[in-house]
Length: 235
View 1 (tube, rainbow, N blue to C red):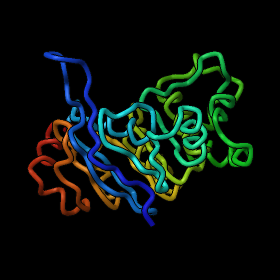
View 2 (view 1 turned 180 degrees about the horizontal axis):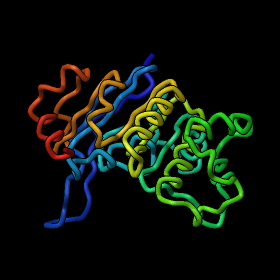
View 3 (view 1 turned 90 degrees about the vertical axis):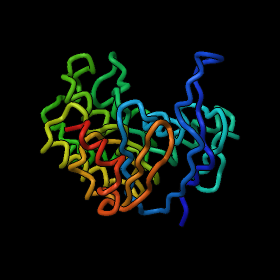
View 4 (view 1 turned 60 degrees about the vertical axis):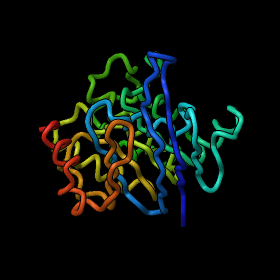
């Protein structure tokens, strides 16, 4: 069953001499049950792609279909409702609200029926040492990231998007949480800079200069020159 269809997606920033093509004519499809990792050098367009898939930014051209619905033909209000139901997002930069407690940040945007999953999600995100009453300003970077992860998983959306969820976490802890993220949703798309995790995924998308240059299983993509170059950078 197809859950995501990306068609000729491009994103430009700036105008005239300052125009920058961050994403260039990217197309691919995702079936329910796939675990996909997006890799590439810094600035290659990975986060731009993920933001467009999640409806957080609008493309310059192209389309994104989720459950056969073109999300960029929706009104802002309808897209917000649709995203809450169908798309879970783990942000790269936390996006926590400082004046809210840890518990309030995790529960933001979730549906009432998912509240009962809170304890299990906190266990999966490894945030037991954080008091639920603490506000976001009192958290370390690693703690804030794990609260961000818990919030994204709690939504239990059919499609979960995660932008470097392991950033700021020790490698061993990051791998455990990555496995928990993959078991929390039917279909997951992740950006990571840790090539050690590739074998956890069923498919690897390699992005270079805004273009999708390889789309393979992990064991196949490891011989690709672009992958070897990317791995050398993150070492």
